[in-house]
Image 1: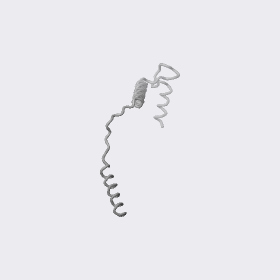
Image 2: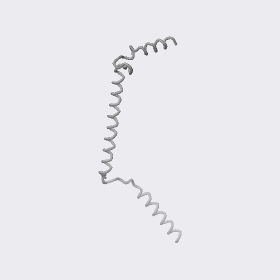
Image 3: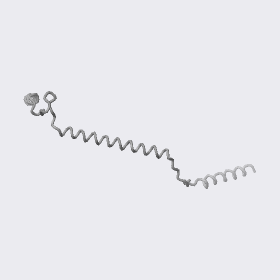
Image 4: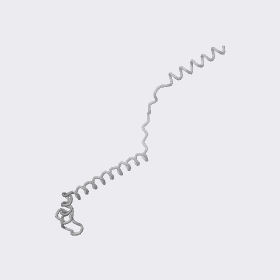
Length: 94
């Protein structure tokens, strides 16, 4: 009798595990306003960083497109500077 009782309990538990192991589906949508606000702020900061990087790249491109001026003689291009002429001649000799 004891052995039959254990077998019955084991069968019921096994059946309960297989029958009760269905997938659970969420039935309610949860909206967390604090999490949403944090996500919006994070996205805004990321967008601001991208805008700053774009502005920095535009400034770099503008600086590179301008002719370089001689710090000793402002307004004179480095290409026409006597120092650059001398540097070019020495580089050609090397």
